[in-house]
Amino acid sequence: MELLSSLEPLLKAFWFVAIPASIIFIIQTIMTFMGADASDGTSADFNGDFDGTDAPFQLFSLRNLINFLLGFGWTGISFYNLISNKIILIIVSVIIGMLFVYLFFLIIKQLLKLAEDDSFRLEKALNKTADVYLTIPANKSGKGKVLVSVGGSVHELEAMTENEKINSGSTVKIIKIENNEILIVQKI
Image (cartoon, rainbow, N blue to C red; front, side, top):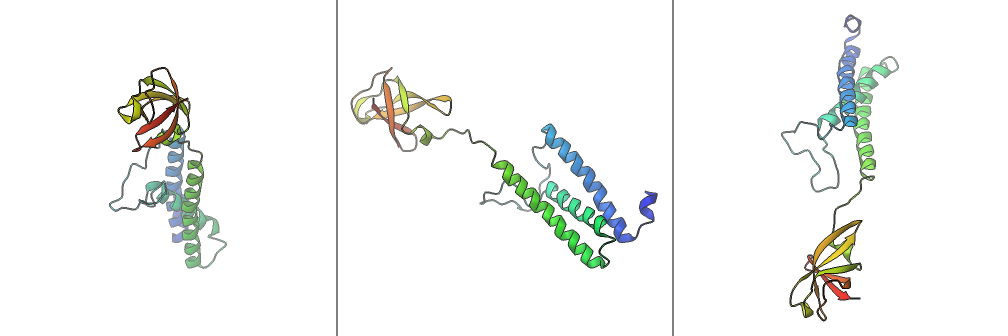
């Protein structure tokens, strides 16, 4: 710390911002690669998230604060001797800090494009063939069950038919979905 005591106050302030921000950033990075990064572990007293939008992150979080301080501190240190006007130096450091946060948003957005949606939606079963598991009564007078393979997994779903009764073991085609929960099938 004797090294920092001989520096000018503004440069010393940049170092006091950059060093802790760098240490916390390194810890966050290690925790991320270890899989211990479920959340920031903090919550704001106000609603700073993007509810109602497709943004997968909060604007005000510990991670974003650290990203900002990292950009701010190291920019101030790097350009301290190049930019003689200290107000311009602080403005440039703030802008670079905000760019670090924006860059983090872009990286997260690109990473989320790699995510795979394996959730089952009934619409995915439309126009597929299925095996009748429980007999389906004629003319929508009752429900039966079918086994349909969607996305590599087999689902047991309720089904009705608009035609004649379909016995267990028959193969059917799913032609439409009624009330977002019951398949309408026809015998093949």
